[in-house]
Length: 156
Image (cartoon, rainbow, N blue to C red; front, side, top):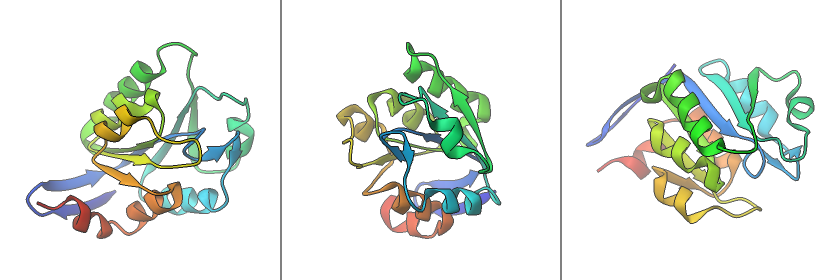
């Protein structure tokens, strides 16, 4: 569990992490350098879930051996499915990270939603649903590895 008191907001008590794959953890279906080691470190504090439509059909192979579950989603209704999964995990204890339009509801539902500004771009609706925007997935994962960094951006 990661617990961090955000002055003027609330204390976050996170035990789950929901991640989008393509555009967030991966570029063109290939896991980005540095992501795997961060997932390994985060998995000591959080249960990690990768929620993906798997556009390139590579997610399972790319994530093989990492301490995370991979949830393959149907082509239609991914936005609704991702938000439903976050609710099932316990929205009040889940952080979510994504960049696509289909991540908007997931970020809005989670206790902490982080939008990524990656190479594929970021949907405007997703930016508006997030609590925080990060310049890269590595920076976003580092926020969870060093949660005091969240205080500066989220306190009132």
